[in-house]
Image (cartoon, rainbow, N blue to C red; front, side):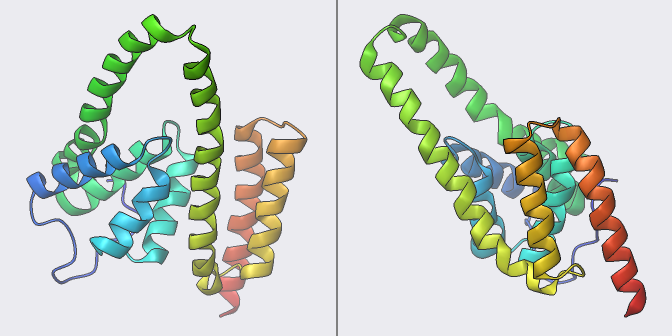
Length: 194
């Protein structure tokens, strides 16, 4: 259905739909400010459901699809192991507990939004979220050594994406289409040479 490549045979992967739901619920509850930073550590290093290369492949696909990246990732991983039922189970695990927490916090925030300490604390969380994203990027950068593009080309594409989005303020969809096509074409050419 959505998976980029089939899972390797063997004991790797969730044992059941319940295991999948619990894992994604636990993952969602660890990711205040963003689950993506934690997802790689949990899914690759702790649970060994994916290799770093597989995670990077699914993450790249999740980022170009519409919707939240981590929800797309949950759908693809659930689908990979249990088909449509797995996709829906992983998404439910990713969304149910945070939904309840956000509803409760929204009601509390309505009462305390004008308190200066609350506003300051929320602004400070932006730096934490940025740090988590940068840490994940650095952790995944090692996987680029085995990429068909190679590290220098991948770094140039990443820099071009940063400049286009952060500095030039181009629409994300334009940047993804343009640089994605360039990256795809270069990888296709290099793989053809092998």
